Length: 119
Image 1 (tube, one colour):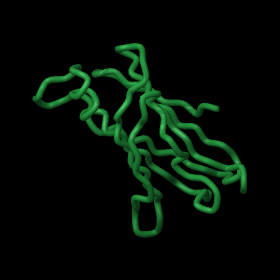
Image 2 (cartoon, rainbow, N blue to C red):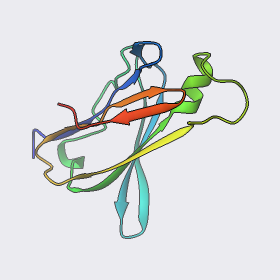
Image 3 (cartoon, helix red, strand yellow):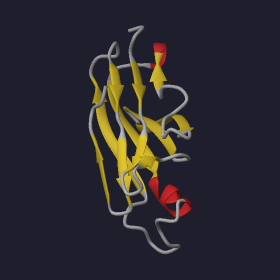
Image 4 (tube, rainbow, N blue to C red):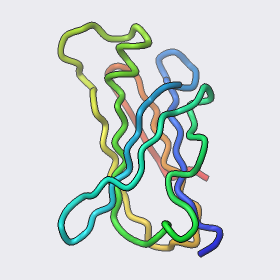
């Protein structure tokens, strides 16, 4: 399991650049529901400074990343003060093998988002 880790990054597809300052929370699904296990903020390159999970914390299971896209869209001048089309963006996924690298990026704009398993 030594090589396993979970990473993410956020790209602003409307502006064509990394999304800096996006708050991200990581939750793990257990018998009692989802429990927050990590939080971070993206750096100037739209990436996290450390993996969201690695080492002994990396375990098979169901997870959810929640990206605070609305705060970012407002701060970057792409959204007004009213109700947003996209605000919190949850991405649920599974980790079947704790020894692998799972990269879950988010591509955002004010009215769309996408994700994939990256490398």
